[in-house]
Amino acid sequence: MKIKLTIIKRLLLGLLLFLAGYQLMILASSILSKPENLDLKFQPINQAIMQTSIKDNLSDEPIQSPDFEYEVIGYRAGAVRASIIVKRNNKSYVVQQGELLENKYKLISVDVDSAIFEYMGEKYELKTSLINAKK
Image 1 (tube, rainbow, N blue to C red):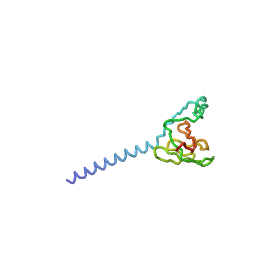
Image 2: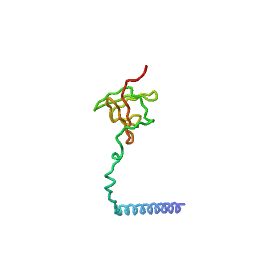
Image 3: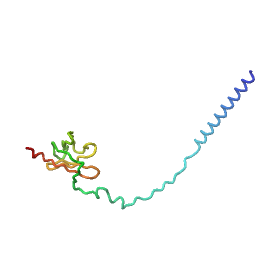
Image 4: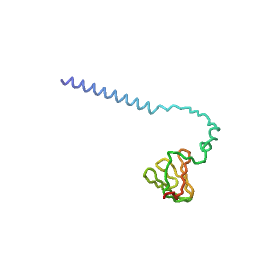
């Protein structure tokens, strides 16, 4: 029985030494190996593409859309910190200049005549006239 235990111990120790030597060889090869030099060749940027922009193709005229139906309740016009209060489907929204209305329409400007919103390059206009024809 004593002989079998020493043989088993030596076999396990030999296996352990073999695995340790294998791991050391892998470690040494990964340390000594150099990364491959990649030749990155980029094509030059076409100047014609850079000269045209999306804003050049869009019109500055505000459009009326059936999806953009808001009722103006109040507004504060001005060049800085202008805001507007609008209502749609019994919900009121207060939007300051530069903020988004329903995470979609960005308020660009508010003046005495109109408020201009922008969404995906298209401009939407709301009349800020608060005088209603209610009787």
